[in-house]
Amino acid sequence: MKRIPMLASRGFTLLELLIALAVTAAVVALMFAGFGTIGRSEERNQRVMERSERMLVVSQWLGRKFDGLRLLSRRDGNVFVSFFSGNAAGAIWVAPLPERGDAGGLHVFRTTPLRHDNGRVDLTVEAIPYDGAMMALDWSSALRETLLQDVRTLQWFYQDGRTGEWTQQWDSSQGGYPARIRLEIADERGAWPPLVFPLARSR
Image (cartoon, rainbow, N blue to C red; front, side, top):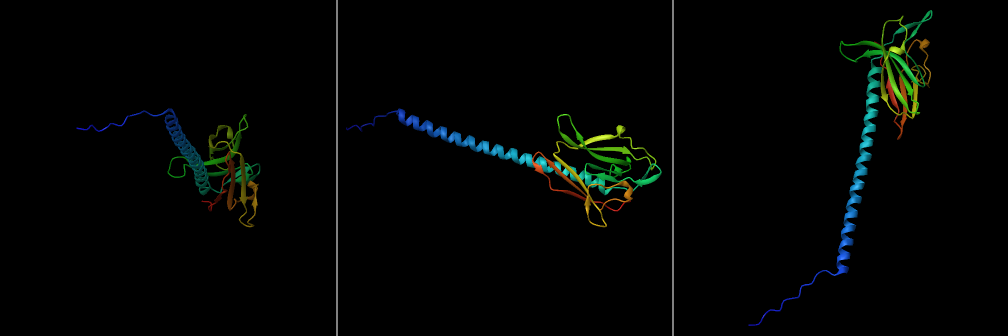
């Protein structure tokens, strides 16, 4: 009976082994590059989401406070002037705190930039309880919160409802309040879309 000849087995040559290792290394490098791209994309998306959330929080908070604005007067020397006033850096007005419910009451709010020693600027809001037209504005005892950190640009504008013109100075002696307020902000990633708040009729 004839035997079937067996093929001689042999191992990989050094050249084949080097080629296999090179191909494997290339595949692994491509995989890590893909993972790196995905990771960077997720980080960018996360930063965009966080920035959008900051915009929404600032817009909603100011919107609620301006919606509850009360047109009240205070005594300034021998004359009574409006509690609302504003300039390019911020505004002062009276609104409820909190917005709804019986807890709390009317407060005088002031928004202002807070400058730190390292050069950083934050948008802060201060509040003191409203105590009538004769009250003194003692901001040393105010509640103070940071509304937005690390602001690069902060400009306030006020629209005259009669002329439609925008100005950066709204004097309390004008006796009224603007039709709209526009806030222009820029952070480390650039300018925000302008925040525009129409002011409801005082209640």
